[in-house]
Image (cartoon, rainbow, N blue to C red; front, side):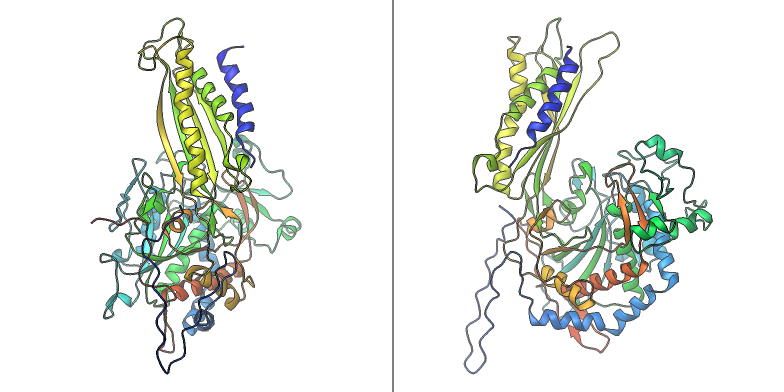
Amino acid sequence: MDKLKNVRLLIMASAVTLTACGGNGDDPVAAAPAPAPVPGEPAAPAPAPVSATVPTIPPAVVSAAAKIAADSQVQALLADQKTPAAAKARWHQFLELVRIASPSRAENRLVAEIHTRMVKEWGFSPTEVKTRADGIMFGTDVNVVDGSAVYNACVEIKGSYSSTAGAQHYKGEFPKVLLEGHIDVVNPEELPPASNPYNALKLQAYSGAVVETPQQLAAIPDEVHFDANSRVIEDANYTKASQWFANTAAATSGGGVRIYVPGYGDMISSTSNGFVLAAAMKKHKIKPVYDVWICGSAGEEGKGNLAGMKQLFGFDQDLGTGSNPLNFVSYNGLEGGGAVNFLGSYRFEMKFKAPATPGPNAPSAVEAMAASIAKIADLKTPSELRADAPRTTYTVGRASCEAPAAGSNVVPSCSLEVDMRSPQTPTLNEIRAGIEPTFQAGVSAENARYGIADASAQAVTKEQIWYGLRPAFELKDANNPATHAGLQSGIATGASTATTLSTGSSSLNDNVPANTGIPTYNFSLNSVVGGGGGHAFWEWGTRGNPETEVQRMHRVLTAILIQSGFHAADGTIVAPSAGPMGKRTREVNR
């Protein structure tokens, strides 16, 4: 058996073995003491009991949610969005944006289109657009992640707070509430040529089997068509694609179609509607107290390494801390599901390289990688070693080798990706401390088989190509402005009756703000029936009820304005539920 066949078998066996069974963001500022009782005045209310899943919603939040949800300005916005014209405009915007190929870390073309629409179509001035085409964002201390620019797209709804006497700020940055969804996708993995930067939106009847290969997808004849200006053409295919259904059964029996395009569900549909909400707030003169930012962020998928969030929150992955230089006081994501606990992960890509001057009987990059995999497979996770440890896993995600040059049997290099995950930073660090040395140990073992020193020109060497970090976070106390607003907005708008938080852990953009200390909650703004293939080339969805989008818009707008504060139609001001100073785990120097 040759070396390449040998390593393939070892990798497959090890990948099964490696799926192991099985300091969050610290606030550097101490909590303020409770005020002393004042003679003749009622005592301050007792603090809410600490629970990780059951918040105690303050009466002020309950009343704020009811007032905002029923406000005439908010109701006028919703009435506008319920019209057939608005529903069509939302649908067209989504179709026109999702077709622009936007692989993670190469979102620049989609960002350029969003920036153009912000000013020319959505009613924002250039000064209200807070990001730039070159990826630079003023005010943050992180503008480059993994050596590349960060292509975020953010717009601001200016609040009144900064102009009030005594307004607090962090180094000139006044408080902000953030609504965010990501604009990158896994497929295609690389940016297509400028001559054809678009994904086809292929249409397939529900009666057909979901495609299995790119060739099957390409062979589907029907697709949504666009004109020379990249605007939707309303032809027969458009009519089929635009049908909406209440559920998959109705879609199956009513002639529904799958619309194949990367990003349909994850997550351009929600992010596009986030920008619809921004434009609607601008049009209807919704005035918050704190500034509200609405962003499409870069780098959530694949090797994106949460680059967009690291820019927004000044997160330094080498230090593992966030400076929050823009002074966000709360965060609202659009991934859906209401997750508040976030699974941390470390990811490494290591390259094992053949000797610089290989001899006839020399160490092999293939065998060095295989030796590393074998050593990793022998490691036990904290949850395997201790019953009280949280579930911690690790796996070889991908192993691949370069083909030998013509006339040679020497494999120039092999690359190995290893992923380790845990809901707690200490256990994540523990498994990393065991795995990281094995990369060099595999190299040394392979060199030792030939009696060659690691420093020799005849030795196999290794190089770290990439390191990814998603910081972990576990919510200890359910009481914070984001969770209060997230739950109460659902009750006030009739969108949800939930009064408790999820106990599960997710891996989302939310990891960064939560770990930095920012209160977080996530929603959804889309309406999709069925759907599948998330992260695959065959991702698909079918249009759901447009009224669901408006109901979700009502909830999200209510939640944002609870946190940011709101100038109501009756002339009163709903005070912000969030304080004016955002949390951070690192001070920024600027």
